[in-house]
Each structure stands twice: as C-alpha cells, then as structure tokens.
Image (cartoon, rainbow, N blue to C red; front, top):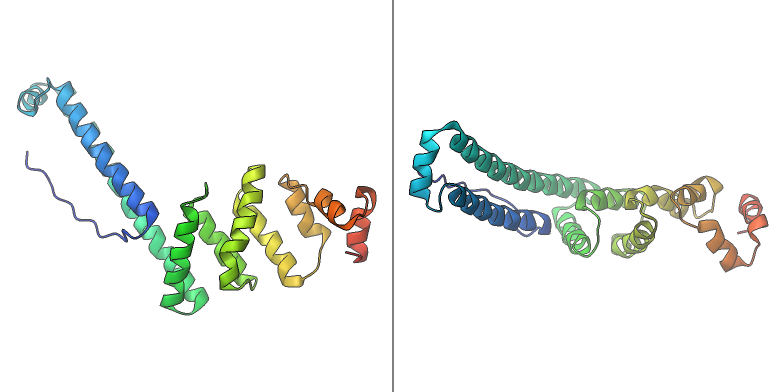
Length: 209
C-alpha cells in the first residue's frame, strides 16, 4: 500500500492548530503501531491477514477514519482562525491591527481554560462597546478570572460588563446578570461602598452609587 502524502496549509503560528497537528501526528503513529501489533507485529504479515478476512479490513478502515477525522479537525481549526482574523479586520479596519489582536488573543488563550472561539466572541463584544484595544486583554483577564471562579463562560459576562462600561452607570438589569451567574456582585459593592446589603439595590436604583 502506497502511503498518501497530504499537505495541509495552515497558520502554524496559531497555538490551536499547532496543538492539533501535534496530536494528529502522535495519534497517527499510535494507530499505525496498534494496527501492526494487532496483525502479528509485522505489517507484511498483518497485510496478509487483512486480505484474509473482513475483520482486518474493518480494522484498517477504523485506523483511516481516526486519522482522517483528526486531519479534518486540524483543517477546521485553521478555517476558524481565518474567520476570526477576518472579523477582527472588519472591526479594527486594518490587517495589521487584526493580526496583532490575534497574536495577543492566542497568547492569552494559551494561559486560560477558555477556547479561542469564545475569547474571540468576547473580544468582538468589548470592541463593539468601545473598549480600547490596549485594554482588551487586561479586561478579559479580569473577566476570565471571575468566570472561571464561578464556572461561567467568559462571554456570559462580557455583554453586561460592556453595557456598564459604555453607559458609565450601574443598573440592576446588568448587575443581576452577574448575580445570576453566581458572581456575588452586590456583596462586593456593599463591601466597597459601606452600604448594607438591605439597601444596596435601592442605592443603585436611586443612582447613589
């Protein structure tokens, strides 16, 4: 059997695609070795057994399906990153700014438990609310810490935070969205302002804080 050589053009600068490519290579080697072991430890001998029955054929098909599945995952990761870069280019107005934002986001994603797609969504939301580019990652870092602490997705907190920032006014509607996700936002405000928990919601409604 002649091996097929498949060239996949990917942005190997990206951590996600790079990690998937490494996993692909390791799994391909592992699956190939396992197939050889299953067929008597030698590929020539194993190949005869494959020809002898459907069981061997099914095993080979399983190996190929596993490898091609991993390959498809790599390609999809590359496509996803290209889409994200295009979206940033549209929002930021230049290829250079989009590439810079992508590099920063990838570095940030490598240090967090969040997927880059979710982080990209949060980044676009913050940009749309007028958060300056240089403040995107610091803001995401703080929101990410809060989200990780309560088991929420970072994008669940980005919109209410963005609205609070854009209006420069505390509102119960947006603060309740933090509270609903398990963030003790009213307790923290009570601690910082000295206003009791019994009165904190009224103070926000009245515009006292």
